[in-house]
Amino acid sequence: MTLSIFTDKARQPNPNDLVAPLGKTYALWKQIRQFILEKYPRGVEEWTYPGKTYGWNFRIKDKRRAIAYMLPREGYFKVAFVFGQKATDQVLASTVGPKIKQELLQARVYAEGRGIRIDVRDERIVPDIQQLVEIKLAN
Image 1 (spheres, rainbow, N blue to C red):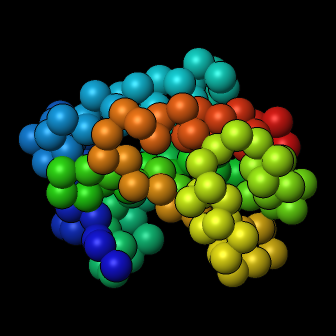
Image 2: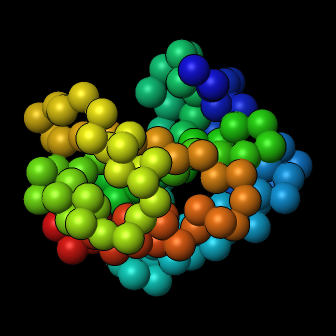
């Protein structure tokens, strides 16, 4: 498991802290963040520190749930989602890539649904992530 690049609990990251570590993927971080906020303008952004094992991560949520998590890594980041059964069915019926569908099917089912994490290393994955955001917001 790769950990967050931000592990100091005493120092919450800010957007400028992302630029150098994310490198060329920083523009994709901003693009995905902006897409979520355009689709859900009332989204609340927050950094959370679930523990030393994971370090700091960023999420955008509505009043009751996380829409998406963005997990900074060295040179890239991950976008994570949790989908309930209805949303899972919609993802499986969508045009997102087969790798994402397979990962979703193989994910352990929890009370809140199935969780997946998608590496963002270049722009090719962005359309799939945008489609996943739209499915998440519709459910």
